[in-house]
Length: 162
Image (cartoon, rainbow, N blue to C red; front, side, top):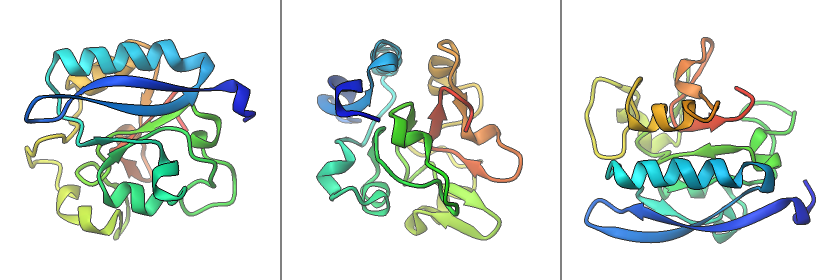
């Protein structure tokens, strides 16, 4: 993805204890979708713990996830593979990854999010099937990784379903 095809957008978020702002880098083609999703989440008072470009973490996805940072663009391979992630194209977003971990078998990422693999929990910032987060993304045609069959990526939303 060429830098000219990306947009850094400043977004309002509900920080749990009140309003805040943050920045997300996305593909220009999905910027309007993302603004709409984040507006819906703000209005629903869904808490977004942190909202910074992955660049603030030196491009380290693990560090960003451990910090419970909601982010989009990050030029990296898919988890456990060699193909480019949808994040590399700025058309995937991870929301509150600490409380919405990636789960494949016994592997949980971030590791500190292992307790949140139990989706019966109701912690602030957790995403559940049919909630305001899933509905906001689905209304714009985005797919939730929490519906995947072979793994569950509870933090992940993408335009392609990958």
